Image (cartoon, rainbow, N blue to C red; front, side, top):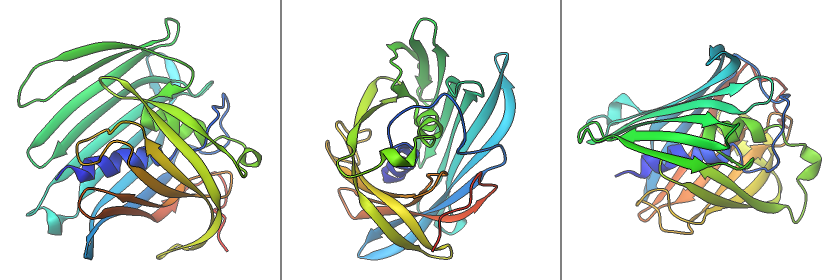
Length: 268
């Protein structure tokens, strides 16, 4: 039943399926809040959980930073069936958007996992730590970084600053996702521009992508599984809709609400 862990990972991934890092920020600001509804379909569709992203101003390790916080949790009506309480955070330097530190705490049913990442950009490494609190074993690893490898939330907010004029026919490539134990590759391909109807939001002008993890992040998905996402076709570049198959059924996520965007959402 760890498909909800997968969808939280994909939602984080979906924010950065447009390549090209930026050293300056024009896409977002402190106070931005995005809320998503996550649903599961196997014959009948059910809204199971919400995923909320929030941006704050703060300091971390002596730097002025954006604190990016993401929390996923099941609705109370589904807690009898399955409890999800996931939280992810990353701290980005305001002067260059590079992450300083990241952490995660995952609770899905009986599963538990905590972890953090400390970045050392002078040495081009990230030091990771993780453990399952029920087991109590501490795990450590040092991973080599490139300019294209960041944790999911850091990638999200870096790549939202990609110029829209770069997104055109034939646009494709890959990016590198830093996890606790390894760095994994995600390939993406631009599929075109569409007007997408989003419940309670309206019709949004979007850019559509297919994305494919070259190795699975979680046992709920097979290697090479593909998902599709629609980003707002504007300077915000926020996900408004996502579809992903899983071994049994499919998972979808849609934008439920937004506030304090840096730019007007491109709605029809």
